[in-house]
Length: 494
Image (cartoon, rainbow, N blue to C red; front, top):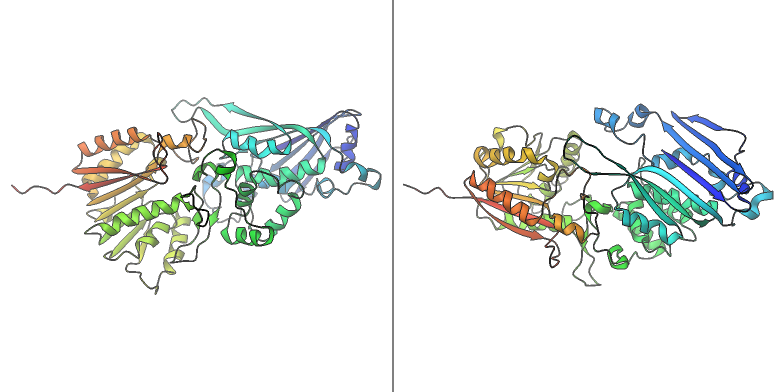
């Protein structure tokens, strides 16, 4: 993880004084297992270039964290990518420049705009290149995005989501660094620390003089604060974030995986922590937009509620139990198995379900159990309803036929509900052609591709099916989510 800051033109040598680091000395510090170095690769009257590099200990990165026991935490990208971690590592080294308090002889240069080039990366961003560009171009930069080419021996992706970003333009050193300290975590959408009211102060401090005029201010604020209560608190202090990202920029709607805006906490009807997704509005200015994740849950619960028989339900891939908690309020439901392989998610589901106890309208308490579609479990057999909400796209395509065969011929639910993204709609989100809505998706299908697979599956199972859409319909692209309702055919009596 690194940042290269280069200043060119008259008086470029002053930049070293604004950074408060002597070009003749190498800054090399180790603090809490992280080595930070600053090395000048050019230091002349008309050019100053400094490399800022941070190298954390990968073991220290996960020691003491909730997922520290999971070996996959030791092989993730956190020790390499430029994220909020990097910003925290180098903050002390750049404190003088960020605060704009060099030695008295150089105070006059704090507000001087230099010809700057900023290179940083690698950045593991879920944002498409176009949105990355639109984060920095309003600040006066020309933006270049460089990607490494991938060469897999198997069919996965042709382009990496990891990128290096190069910014060129006139700016003060202080503004340039403050903008990066706010926007780098927005790009990566990762925070390694507890998000509190201090984040609001950081937005105000680092965003002073430029954020209010930024066309993507809403996106920046929401990805920085994440939680609904903090966002509301910010709006009480600074005014409403009323401009929609998609409406303002003409890009389309905000996609769940394209920008994964926020974790929104609700305290109504037992619903909590709704992970961010795209907003879908009916055009009314008085009503807040409805998030696509919410529309999915509504569509599924509406289908279940309308079924004549729904005593027993299996929620496969239940995650933190958000959908299962909704199902608990449907009259006629007697049992809900919330099946999830992740121990961390099951713990959160247990906390969520515990809060349902004694609530008015709850007719069945969900039961969190460990399980996976890859392993047969007789508990899943002969249930009234089985639900796979945003699950199948996380499974390799070659394994799906076997899984669907197990469901239809071994588990044999009376009704199987499956939701999955509509690949065609990604263009409405201005996503790049080869991009997926989430980094863990193994595939995304068009409407025709899904229909073809459903036809194939039902030929080998005693089911009929109907495909519906969820979310706002756009002519030529359909709706963002596809919902398949498989119903078991009644066997004729001979």
